[in-house]
Image (cartoon, rainbow, N blue to C red; front, top):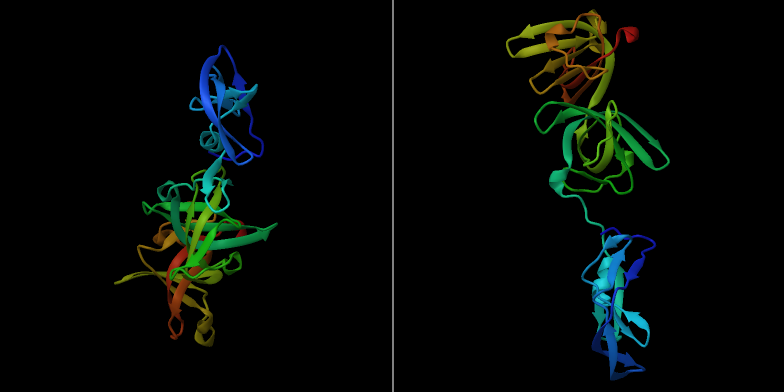
Length: 280
């Protein structure tokens, strides 16, 4: 039950039943007579709460402390040393782990304002299908690396490869937006934005070359090795086949973590975003 700042107990009467009760005063215990009002119905914030039946003693209504505390969102404990009852607010229940949606991908943009970090994450969901989410990271978001070491929102930036657990509520926007319950940092990817100089099919798969330098200028080129795990989409999230990438297309590539020292250098392509025509 979510604790309200103000809770109201409403009593409604229809008749009177007799009863006896025990009341304490000034450290003494004495037997008193009261009226058990089983006909009185108790509601908490407008919702019926049938387990509470008040007893009237000397014109005052008394209700069971434990049941009433629970109805108002408190935990009741007995402090033997102090001879007193302690009331503490109940902790709000966390959504079960299986209620969250999990996506793994790279952060293509990270913006922080007013204590809230918005991560633009392009990746794949649990079923291996493309998933694009704006994950909202705040003070309640758990941020760790693969070893469990605590990280902060400042560690999340474009190129970070992460696994994000979000939901269960997701805004129906494009791309979808949701609060990030947990972010696990899986590593960092390098970023290169350039025009495609070549697309080649090899015995081991496809290669996409960024840059078209020759001779000494070839060192500025980068050869991306594309695998089945490589995500290739447009900037609007539309899937693209590697063979449909054309020479001259401008792309934003996320690659690594390792890069060879060859000329041109080679690296594994994590994510390739084909930019729109007006960015070519």
